[in-house]
Length: 420
Image (cartoon, helix red, strand yellow):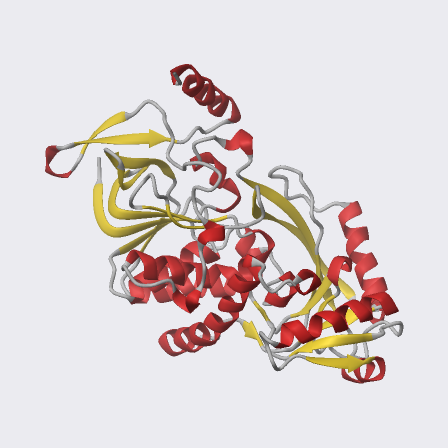
């Protein structure tokens, strides 16, 4: 059986895993990135890429953990963009167009005005635009607009492109990409993680980072049936305007959003559907997205439809990601469950994990307690161990993940029988 040894093994090459691998490799760690299908193959190449943390400040709540993590993410992008472009000589994927938060009735306008003062304590550059100013800045918006918050620093990113660039930069710093390669099991020596087993052999590592997206429940002690992390389907639509371009990212609250991309297309999103792992676009989803266009930017109703698609957001049971080392399993790190805010929080999560693995303080003075990895239970499975010869002749344990729902149920039943 082939055996490889690294400082860190990262499982999953979406935006979170790729950022983790990049920051670790850049710091001189020996890193391997293990991916079963393709870089940015799932949610990281399906999202609209909005960098709008202020969208999480519902009713002006400045204590929201996702808001705080997103604001740190916005700061992190400033450094990350410059680093990547310097190291690779390539565009990092950021679109520096401002964001508008419009109101389409007097009640919405009043609510946004109330929130603005509090939000300006976090981002002083925010401003209020009256209806005439909004229409002047963004002529494509519906005439019924009553005003808007203007956020100059919140843009958007080509998230799939950025993910692939992070992997490229990580490789420039010495990281190894194993693809396609499935991580079949966690490797243990007593309590501490020692690596992962793949179909082509053992990967030994002092640290294992799970960045496994919507499939992460397979690694949780309670199994997939408890939906610790579940897929939330989001359908999107890409339009090609024939006239003047959209000048801002438009976040219209519960109505939806429109995101102008660097190539001139406009992404319209998004639905939120519990449909398991189905990613099929539907007529109902398309109708919902077209309603967003009609209500928010009716001038784009004549735009050409380029494509429709869907992705699977990895949403945690309580709506917050899991970030950090699992207390009951030293060496096992979680970076999963980022839901619909992966574009803004994914890269900074990778940086956080990299810093913590190196024994450094939590960056950006963040409080990670709301994101505690084991707040909903342990991530180590209690399954029958398989023997594997470890380094130095010691015996290691391989705790495998169930491949099917039936196996998950059988494992859960076995665990219930073992309980006193």
